[in-house]
Image: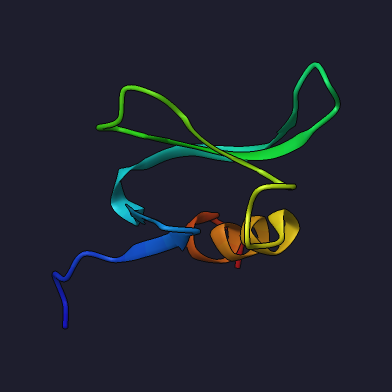
Length: 73
């Protein structure tokens, strides 16, 4: 199974984990909260607004941290 690409799903989008360069949460000018994901190959940043998404932003951030964040042993 080594060498297979791994993806994470956001609503109907599946994003290759190896292409993610940054992610996090933000708040727009209307105080609407969203999750953003920037990849190497996309022209735009993916944005998933809390009110429009089928997932919890905090849970998805925890999932991304668990997979991608380098932690001290």
